[in-house]
Each structure stands twice: as structure tokens, then as C-alpha cells.
Amino acid sequence: MKIAIVGPGAIGCLIAGLLKIKTKEDVWIYDNLQTRAARLKDSGIKIEGLSGNHQVKVSIASDAKEIGLCDFVFICVKSYSTEDACKDIKDLVGENTFIVTLQNGIGNVQILDDYFGPEKVIAGITNHGATLLGAGHVKHAGKGDTIIGKADGKLSGTLKQISNLLSKAGFDTKISKDIDSVVWGKLIINVGINALTAITRLNNGRLIEYAEARSLMRAAVQEAAKVVKRKRIKLAYDDPIQKAESVSKATAGNISSMLQDVLNKKRTEIDFINGAVVRQGKALGIATPVNEVLTNLVKTIEASYDKAVK
Ligand code: PAF
Image 1 (cartoon, rainbow, N blue to C red):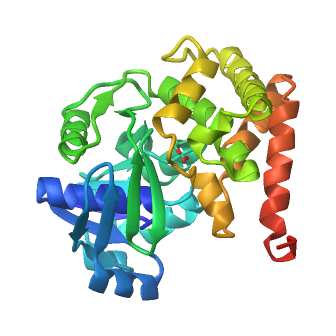
Image 2: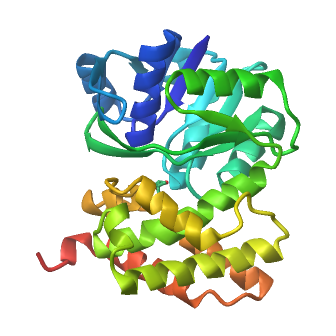
């Protein structure tokens, strides 16, 4: 099977590296940056942390034509780059290709559906924590569920194939008939953890050790849960606050993806996480003041990297 991982970020490198080591499939990374792709081709992927220490060579290309048609394409770019990635990877996608997104946030499935057609798109989430320590160098910092499904709820052999593949690589993967609920369920976790860790610069575990941060986390999660309820989406867990806190504990040592972005002075996924809750809240007439403040703070941090007092 030919598998392409689009984007050599933390989760992209972790999935690509472990798929290569544990499954021996034909694994490729698509990297839109030519110089980085050339560097990664030489150095390979280095993994440390919960899944052990590994150094592995994976085929890497910055021209999708070099990779050619794939069986499965995993989209691992940041949510704000999904649209550009779709344009870049058309040579990977043929009649029998399936595209899997495990990205954070709300909106990626819609972008992929619009571009490739919903029949090709498999939605999902992963609660594994991964920290990018350098180009191609990733620390596996937290384990959690990985869940995939089709938006129409249909179960297929393809879903089973992908879940077997990911499970073999060490990402214990379940299939859901209600993937919308899973994706929104994950959003609530990111709403509780990501912006607050990016603002406080605490790791996921430390965040809930501070009463004030914990109370903001609870308020942000509660607002998102109201939006979900109004949308008549049934979450797979009963208590969203308890769930967000338990993921913080399970990924205690992890530096959230949004804090990694801030530390690396990069754009964050705030618009697809807390910002998405604010937008949906407005459309539904639900007040989301805490998410609005968190969104505005992260956007200010993002816009002022070069002006911040050192
Ligand atoms: O975005 C992240 O960092 C991850 O989704 C999670 C689960 C919050 C762990 O850090």
C-alpha cells in the first residue's frame, strides 16, 4: 500500500515514522518546503518518548508527482493550511484514494469534502500528544484514543483497513458511526487546553494545577458544550469538563500544539478551535465571552511576536 503523510509537523512525523517502522508499507511524506524536504531526506525521522527511540528513513518529496497516486493520504498540516494542501496534493489522489484527516479544529472535513468529494474523505481525531523538537525530530509525549469514521456514518472495509494500519503502528484506533460527535468532542478538549496553555506557557498537566486557569478552562469548555448541545450533537462522553481535565492529565508532559506554535513564533489554529466556538455561538445566539477573550489574546500574541518584551 502507498501512504502519504501531508505535512512533516509533530503528528505527521510521528505517524509517518511509526507506520514505516511497524507496518513496512510504502510510506511517503509530502513537504511543500523543498529545502526542508531535502534535509529530511538525508536525516530521516527521529522519534523519542512513549513509543521508544527510533531513527527511520521515509521517502520524502516536495513535488506530489514524485509520489504519485496513493491508497491513503493523511492530512497532517495545520488547519489554516488545509486549503493550500488540497491544491498541492492533487497528484496523490486518484479514483481509489481515501483522504484521512486527524487534524485539530472544526472546518477541515468541509474543506476536504469540497475539494475531493465526501465519498473520499475520512474524518477523525487523535488524542496522542507529539512535540516537534526540531525538523523531523519528534517526541511522543502522550497517548490517547484515535477514532475515525465517515460523515455518512457508513462502516466500510476501508475504515477497518485504516484502523488496522494505525493500530499496528501503535495508534490504537476505533471506528465511530457518529464521527461528527467525535470531532466536536475533540474540539471541546482543544478548546479547554490549547489557548490556555499557549497564553500561560504551561504544559497540559500543569494547567490544571492552578485554580484560576482550571476555572477558565471549565468556563471555555462549558460554552463550547452549549454550542454542541444546541447543534444537537451528542457527545461520546457525559461530562465535557471531566473529559478535558482527564486529557490534560493523560498528556501531562505534552506541550500543546498551540503552545508549540507560540514558542516557535508561528501562526496558531485559534480560528479553528476557540474562534470556531465564537463563530458558531454567534450564529446560534449563544454567548461565548471566555472563548472570545481567549481567541483575542492568542491572536494578539500571534500578531506581536517581534514586539513582545523579552
Ligand atoms: O493539540 C494538541 O496539543 C492535542 O490535540 C492535545 C490532545 C490537546 C494534546 O496536547
